[in-house]
Image 1: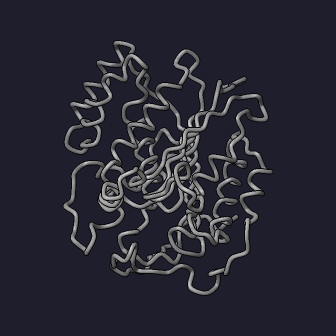
Image 2: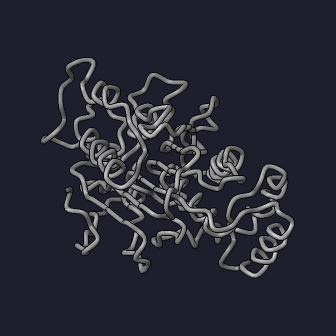
Amino acid sequence: MAGYQPEKRLVVCCDGTWNDSVSTDSPLTNVSRFSRCVEAIGEDGILQIVYYHTGVGSGTSKLSNSIDGATGRGLSRNIRDAYSFICNNYNFEGGNDEIHLVGFSRGAFTVRCVASLIDSIGLLTKPGLVHLHDLYHSWEKLDNNKEDLISQVTELEEKGLLRRKIQVEACAVWDTVSALGVPIPFGIPQPKSPKLAFVDAEVPHTVKNAFHALALHERRKHFKPLLWHSPSQDHINLRQCWFWGVHSDVGGGYEDAGLANLALIWMVAQFQRATKLHFNMDTLLRFLIPDKLIESTTGRNLHISTSVFGIQYGYQERNIRIRSKIDKGT
């Protein structure tokens, strides 16, 4: 539409399992570095508001963190927190706000769920948020509950408590893993759940740009990536690219961030090419220059492991099928 101008840009950043750039001094992931590179005001004068959410299993209790990280407990809360932030800050009067979703690992799955939730129900107004609990539980079992959800959404829309047809400007992720991601310690399998089973490889209709950086050398089968399929909708700009390294070589979180830097630069470049989100390039450059020299693992073992915290995980090579929509790294 001619003369279109967003009133503000809402940037939701969800970190990976056990990742917390606020309460720890651990090496930053690409999600936390990305969030800190976004300028408060865009080059076009548009306000850019960043929301950063720590990963699943990053609370204060060590036992709770271990359980949350291993089982994915807390994922639903993170989805609702991110969704509520958007609802509380979205300008329903103008309806021109841009939504950007960014995540790594389970945080990547989280923001993909948020995009799917927005696609399914739209955005609740502040008075409408009182209905989020019931709507969310209907939505997470969407495959078995579609008619009931449609009825709820229609009723709320008629009451002016919900806005449909909300566009997500970009959904950008590093190495998405599923809702469970890693198994319970000692290899005990987790029961399959019907919840969120529909959030798979399809890019939601509401998403305009979808970017996915993937780890080429990750071998742990419980870190199997959840790729996006080539979209059937022509309006969706999908770019996926394989990067050298394992899960956290691509998403960040190691002291040696050389490989993660490449995936971060690529992601920022996708935003610069396809959106108007504005970055502080001086801040980005500081993140790319290490504070101290460390012994590099690049070109040697690539952090390849079949365990996390001493817990052994199954081995599985990543099966890469070249598709026309897979980016060659340009």
